[in-house]
Image (cartoon, rainbow over all chains, first blue to last red; front, top):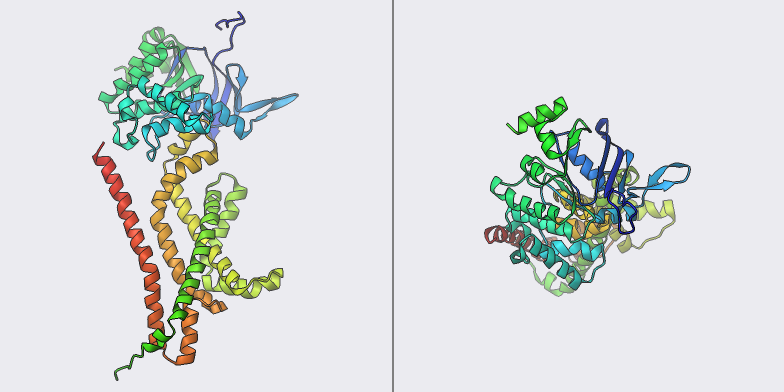
Length: 264
Length: 228
């Protein structure tokens, strides 16, 4: 746990304890325990259906966990502590506030096609953070510059390439100045030649100290950028470690089989 | 035998058709206006994950889409006052009946329109901290409404025609004005032809508007795709 300015150790950016999530009879997450330190980049890998995306969606509270706790910088999210009893679900307003502090980027970008690029960027800062329009535009320009798309400020999303759309989606999430960024297979829907431009933006963010939880199939990115890699299968974290050790000497047999298949 | 048309009957009583057309328009505008608001809430309720909202809304829509409008109008006019003590005049009864019917149809238009918008649109709004209503009003509905405009206009044209049923409960709309004229002049061919022509004049602009909107929307999509 890194120390804060006062010398008191700061709590991790995200702490996940005993997280369970089911959809009907299908138990997707079967007890996840993870701590993500501030500024740390964690890549989550694993086969389809292993629960990686559900894990991110629970952290962002797009799905409400059935059991377990998630803390954002030490504060319980999604629920409220209750003296002498189990936590109760937080109000919608609290859930919205928490979501606004956790940026999420989706596989299919989910940009709003009826709004311009700038319109996409300033909507949430104005509606959620209640920023004046001029400040929101300034913020939007700053993050569009960061992802290298200032020339697309007035374009509509359907006119952009997949890579450009995903960079806009990253800028849109950054405009909320989140404490943590979640990336859910953000390059999976892109043509191979467009993957690099998105990964470059993510690398830049990582280098600037952004806390990131990244679900990815880009093993090269995980190896190069991640501080730690988690391998998930069947709703549990099977193995975790530094990228070099996990990729070169996986201990668990399931991890070995998965890596043998994807790195072939 | 060649029929001797006497169009003077129509020219001499043209204001009756104007009055009838105005009442038809009034019934349509009020009913569609109420239906648009009530239909939105019903459509959203039908999509709700909360059963206490979804199930009553689904039943409301099902029942009032299945009951013929004429039966509904008669029921509201004759039965509702007896059961509830609520007395409505004939125009209010007609507006209530047509509004209920329209809201059931429009709820389905809203539901289909909202469902046609990718789920990810709302999810990305929520992930940024926007509330359900912010996401619905700022992100989902503006996209859905563009797709709903043609069916909305179709429903409007349908209900303009269906408003003729209000004549049965005594509303002085277009058809009833004509029927009254026939009773006094015995010139049904001229009167009913004039009624048909008046309905055409009222509805054709709506039909043209529907076509225009559909064309414009598809042209805009093509333009955006062609000029990145």
